[in-house]
Length: 272
Image (cartoon, one colour):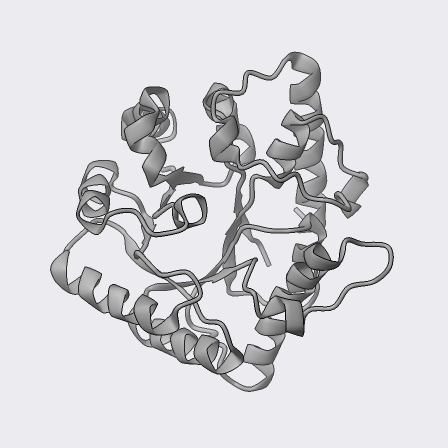
């Protein structure tokens, strides 16, 4: 089982990111705000890696609502991603399913395969949205921070409660989808973000083989802030800063070494 990984990185590390990323994860709102970031995704990346993959994200995690649909479709046309996350609505299954239908109807023929992000506040809503995406999307995405994980996840005294609940909550969600027969083994899946890096060992150890990809800036953000992984255990905490807010970071060589070490340990977590 091999999971493709992308660690979002500041613009100064984008050229080096080719060496540690299996594909490039593009936050669409940065395309309008950051010229160097825009240049990377509009030409420089594929000039260096002609067969490289790009996954375009609608920036809902950063903006708290999906990027404007019309502008998003325009960026899809310009970037020509291999995959793009159709605009969704945080923890709103009905709104997400409606958005998916409207977007794919209004913007037919966009380059790339569609990724449907599962949303919902309850198990019933999540299952409904998951089944919808299984039927309509090319690719299914599951987030790391559903509020329902506060109920379904568990923690222990050695770890911050919320982070462990999010970490184990997504594991439990995947397991329950499999156990109850909802999991679509014929569709690729993407895991959106992470709380604690060690979460991903579970998917590898349990051979959830159609988890095709994941994205997390955790090893990079941690390194930028001076936090080094404890081997392949990762960290017991999660820096609160978003990579998008550190997009102009210019790490010195010592900081780069910490980032490289964190990334090497992350690869061990997913046994690569």
